[in-house]
Amino acid sequence: MKHRIVVLGAGYAGAYVAGTLARRLSPADTEITVVNAVPDFVQRLRLHQLAAGQDVEAPKLADVFAGTGIRLRVARVTAAAVADRTRSHCGKG
Ligand SMILES: Cc1cc2nc3c(=O)[nH]c(=O)nc-3n(C[C@H](O)[C@H](O)[C@H](O)COP(=O)(O)OP(=O)(O)OC[C@H]3O[C@@H](n4cnc5c(N)ncnc54)[C@H](O)[C@@H]3O)c2cc1C
Image (cartoon, rainbow, N blue to C red; front, side, top):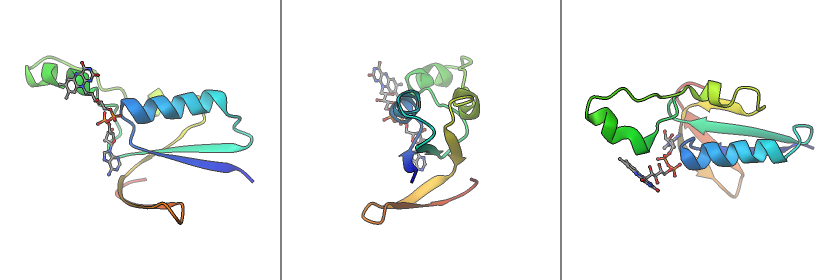
């Protein structure tokens, strides 16, 4: 049976851990899904530049994860039932 890993949030932490797991684990027995509220990778460290009127790149998460085998769901998580190992979400995805 495949292990299913769900990463909630694709900021610096979530994007990094999903990428690291994808590199280290075999897709034959692992399925990694990332759920993020928006389709872009928001670089929080650069938001002050955006506020000051500079152009700040916001890469598409689909491009960030392309070729990694990571499944992306753009949706806002509303609850996580840890004991049941499930999550609820609304929005696209
Ligand atoms: C102006 C600024 C400058 C900073 N400078 C530094 C610095 O110099 N050094 C430093 O170490 N740190 C700095 N920080 C802090 C750093 O940005 C944060 O520590 C870092 O972004 C935290 O990363 P994270 O992945 O935990 O969360 P975030 O980057 O906040 O990512 C969370 C992700 O989860 C998603 N999400 C949230 N709620 C939901 C939901 N319900 N459902 C689905 N998705 C959801 C969001 O869309 C987002 O993509 C700075 C922050 C700011 C704002």
